Amino acid sequence: MSRKILSKLNPFRRKDRGEQAALMSAISDPLLAVDIHNAPLFYNSKFNLLVDDKEIGKRRLWKVIVDHEVVQGYQAALSEGRSTSIKAVQFHTATGTMFFLVTISPLRRSNGKIYGALGVFHDVTELKQAEQMRIDFVANVSHELRTPLTSIKGYTDTLMEDFVAGRPMEEKFIHAIARNTSRLMNLVEDLLDLSSLEAGSVLQKIELETEDITNRIVRQLQSSSGGKKHTVVFQIDSSVVFADPRRLEQVLVNLLDNAFKYTPPGGQITIKWSAPNQDSVELRISDKGPGIPLEHQARLFERFYRVDKARSRESGGTGLGLAIVKHIMQRHGGSVWIESTPGGGATFVCQFPMK
Image (cartoon, rainbow, N blue to C red; front, side, top):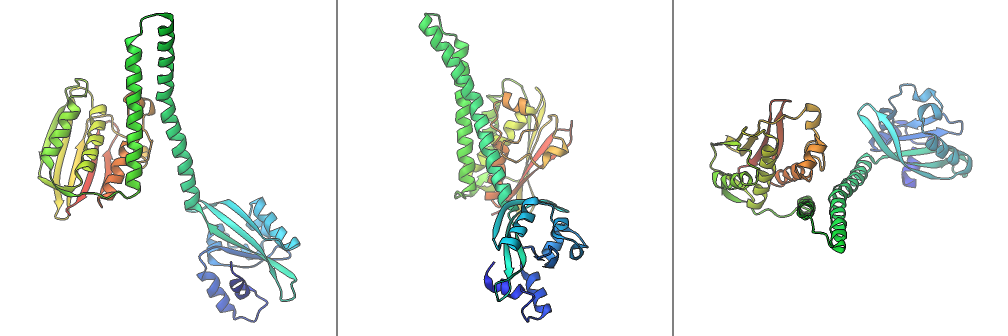
């Protein structure tokens, strides 16, 4: 905080108390100043909301703030005249856990004598969450890469041993290497796609025939569904959609691939295109799978989030498909959501703007 603001907050200057209160309330960061006896000198409304304590003015510092490092920072300012910055101090508030960068500085009179200490609490919750997301992302990618790489290395080592020993090479080992290599390639392609979408890649939106593009993707997936003989029902109430062809194909592939995987053999999958209003076109893909419990639905479109981790990996999924769908819909100015009850299947709904 600048010296100019600190001077305005100094209660020993001849400033109108109403002006001081208005100034402190206008500052977006929570503020708390204490005197040399650790009693609050002043605080703004933002700090009051942070600690939710109606008795702040009657308490000592260590009763208001329980974080030991912050209390030590105030003591260093009062006794040594030293400023301190403390990163990622955690507060539990009515709206959830928040993190603050706390900067504590001594307050001095015109003769240089310390009469108090001021703490400024800068909200870094979003930065902390972003950092945690990055850490989780790296951990997830590392895990997803390690699994197929471990298999490839194991089978390759076995094949090399067989070759050196003059034994015939097992065909199943070669197939396993090929399968895990494809899994790695799919993961890398999905990561690149996600990165491109998050970077704001330009879409080439044109008018597309909904029936043509849907039929093509269905035929493609049916040929690789392992003979499950699903019944696919089409309801085409809107013949066109305004979208990027490549990105729309990705949406259809990811959502239909999930439907084919989780619908039991011989089950029904319904694909419906409609125009619920004059401003949008809606795609609904419904399956007859096990459904998704409510507690998982809010996180379903997160990167690498899986409801059934073991089953998803067995089916060869990367854990990025629904995250890609979400980002594609956002880039189109549309939205995606799920409607599901356990045991009642799942319906994924994509809403595209008309233009």
